[in-house]
Length: 239
Image 1 (cartoon, rainbow, N blue to C red):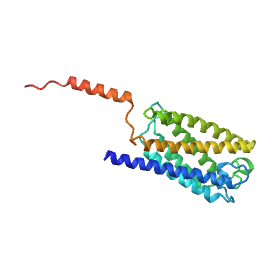
Image 2 (spheres, rainbow, N blue to C red):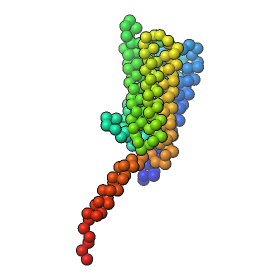
Image 3 (spheres, rainbow, N blue to C red):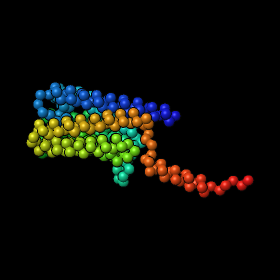
Image 4 (cartoon, rainbow, N blue to C red):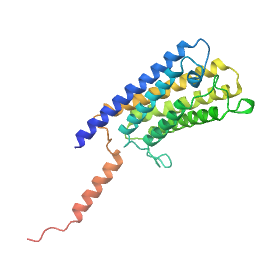
């Protein structure tokens, strides 16, 4: 039964990775259709020729993220606070928020939802997209402290800080409406890194030989010591 479940998790991780990679390809395909510099969300704005392509890309991202999160549900951070819930929970919530962002797209130009340009539609889309990005970064940070997967931990740490830095700077430039081309480019870089992390995370789970990781070494050693102590404490049988 364990091997069967492990195979199902591996298939889910691979299928999720393919869907997420498809989403990345669709977003970049939509980007090359537009001649001017745009932020990612602008590809799905009302009146844009790339609107439906963008919505399809987010649908693939949502489904792929759910599958990868399912496969990695046993991965947990080894430090306080970050281990309150698993990276999978963060990915599931992020996927749900991306689903909202895919259905409630922004108005043409994706204006910041402040001042005279305020609309509830733009506020809902922006809030969902920003929170989803933050939760994706949190999932990476949680995975960075999952010591039972050393390769995933190192990659996740680099990706978490890279995505947070690029997306944060790009978002600030977008709100201030200065350096629009640089801000848009930084957001696309952040999006690409985040999506690639999900793909690699899923592939690492699929090809690790076990979808459910072994406990860390110190925990296995402690279990062996407790087992030996119990054996020594067991009274010898009376003949």
